[in-house]
Amino acid sequence: MKKEVIDIDSYILKKLSQNARIPTTEIAKECGISRAAMHQHIKRLRDTGILKNPQYNIDPFDVGYTSCAYIGVRIESGALFNNISEELKKFPEIVECNYATGPYSIVLKVYTRTRHRLMVIINEVVNNIDGVVGTDTMIVLDQSINRSVEL
Image (cartoon, rainbow, N blue to C red; front, side):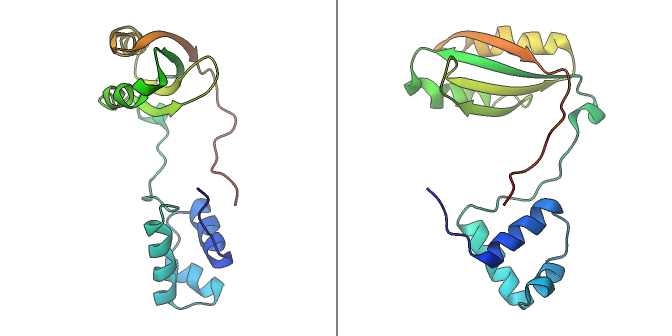
C-alpha cells in the first residue's frame, strides 16, 4: 500500500537518508517551518511506518565478519514462510530474510566471521528447519553499490 508523502515530507526523508544525524532544526529552517511543525512531520512519518528507527550503518567487515553470502532457500509450501522466518530470526548472522518469487521462496543475506560458521548456518540451521527442501549459496566477493532508494 502506497503511503501519502507530501513535498515537505519528501524533503525531510531525503535529508535524513543522506545524513541521519542532521539536526532537525536545520531541516526545519531549510523547509521554512517551525521546530514544532518539523516534529509533527517526523511523528507522522513514524506513525505511518514510512520512517523507521534511525540506525547507524556498520561495515560488517570492519568489525570482524569475513563472509557475506546470499542463501536461496526452497521450501515445501509458501504457507510455511512465517514459521521458517521465525526460526531464522534466532540467528543474528542472518541480517535479511526475504520472501521471493523464482526458484527460491526465501532469499537470506548472511554475514559470518568464518567460513566454518557459514557452513554451520547452511547445513545445521537452514537445512534442518522443517519445510526446507534445499538451499543454494552465493558467496559475495565484493560490493560496488550500497545505497538507499532515491526519493
